[in-house]
Amino acid sequence: MAIPLNPRPLQAMPRRQGRARNLPLACGGMLLGLAASLPALGPAPAGGAVMGGARALPYAESVQVTRKAAEAVLARSGAESCLRGKLTNALLGLSASCGAAGQRNALCELADQAVVQLHWPLSFMDDTSRRLLELIKDAEA
Image (tube, rainbow, N blue to C red; front, side, top):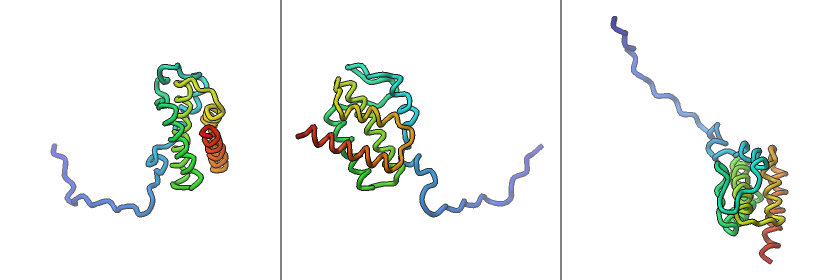
């Protein structure tokens, strides 16, 4: 028995206008699951990173990535969800770098505290960014 073919040709689907609906996916989203499990993992061993965790950059490089993310938040250079993801990823990386380098300072403690927060409103991101920039400035002085 033959299956009848549709005599009408396929029509092009209309394009949606405006911004993408899946903005968090377009920005990379957040790593909340990883952030929530970070305290259970404990500090990273001095020679490597936790499997599945943020890659540990050299400490100085991670501090600069964190500075750029904090400055982007305060300047509002991007969508809120993108800024949240940028700051989250920078702090996860800083926390991993602190553990790998054996650093235990106020900047590392702030990163460890911030990454376990599940709710990141703009006010929290602003306060955290200001504190990060102050601590980075103090460390360079």
